[in-house]
Image (cartoon, rainbow, N blue to C red; front, side):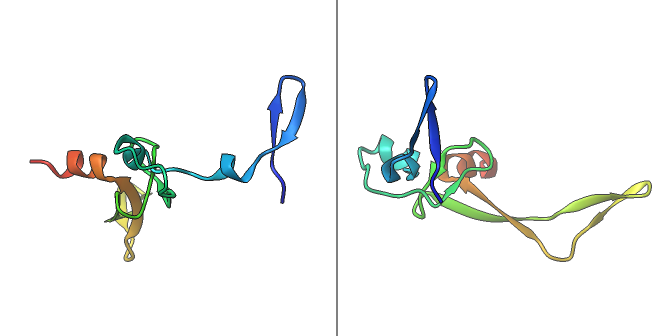
Length: 89
C-alpha cells in the first residue's frame, strides 16, 4: 500500500521516514532514534515503549436509566507525563 501527500496541486508518495512516529519525550531528551509504539489517549503525542504506560479502564455503557460495566477492562495508552498528572494526589 502506498500513501500519498498533497503538495500544492500535486501529490507525491510519502517516504518511509515520513511515516515513522518518533517519541516526543525522547525527542525532548535529544534522542531521535526511538520509534513510537502508540499515541497518548490524553495529549495525542507519540510515545515509545519506555515512556508509554498501558492502563486498564472500566468500560461503561448506558443501559435503560443506569449504566452497566463490562466484565473485561479495556486498555488505553498514555504517555509518562499524562500518567503522572492523572495519578498525582
